[in-house]
Picture (tube, rainbow, N blue to C red):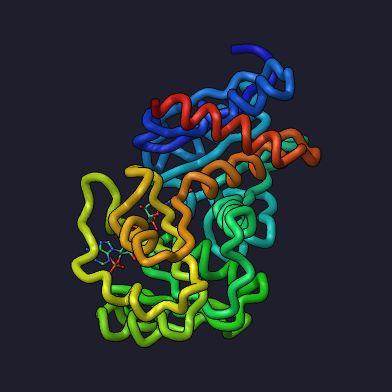
Length: 281
Ligand code: NAP
């Protein structure tokens, strides 16, 4: 392929929604810029980066297993990528690699758009890669307290210890603990795999009963579009959102970095969402 191009890399990567999202936005902008998916196995980043430089790749997105491995390979990192220790968007400018993390900003934008933010006390479920991006971003964006509740409490504690703002606090994942924390929370964000197609399921939703009536529940999962957690929250009259808006907004932010200019985020998000929901029907 000759001429500037964009890519997404990972392993597996062929299921990635990024080509669909970016092609829809590029088409809306009238830009003839190819965006393709490439399998890059773990350990293959140095070879890929050399290849990208030689083939006019002006930017790429990265998914598992590369987000953390990219950190030492970048010439520069933005604030979110530094804070989170993971990169999902890379720009190539004048031979230098600049690493960004748009998962964090994408989640915040989705919370703002859905009316679930600002929320003073937040319960984050999970302490994996996504929870790290979300919890540290919320802590840096004005949350008063973010409780990180995880099955493996040591991982929640390590995440809380990494917060320079001292807003994060670790807790376990028992129904009793969750109910106690939810009684003071305005937002619950599910960053575990529970409820995702093919994964496990919450055994107990009683913690939702403890939430104040005006609280919201945000689930990062978008497949299925409504998890049992969201259905249970909606049945209790709570405001809810699935993870599709986060997926869309992280892509909008990535495209702004790739093109090095601000975009009309609302119309970009609408184009990306239409492509996704059209593809799903
Ligand atoms: P990860 O690093 O593997 O973390 C998984 C988390 O789920 C861990 O905290 C793990 O707890 C917890 N967990 C797994 N099984 C559990 C169970 N049976 N009971 C209790 N906790 C359990 O995964 P990730 O990359 O953070 O992704 C998490 C979810 O976010 C996935 O569903 C992913 O699709 C979604 N996501 C969505 C977006 C978006 O744009 N909407 C972006 C990123 C991720 P332990 O630490 O105890 O194992």
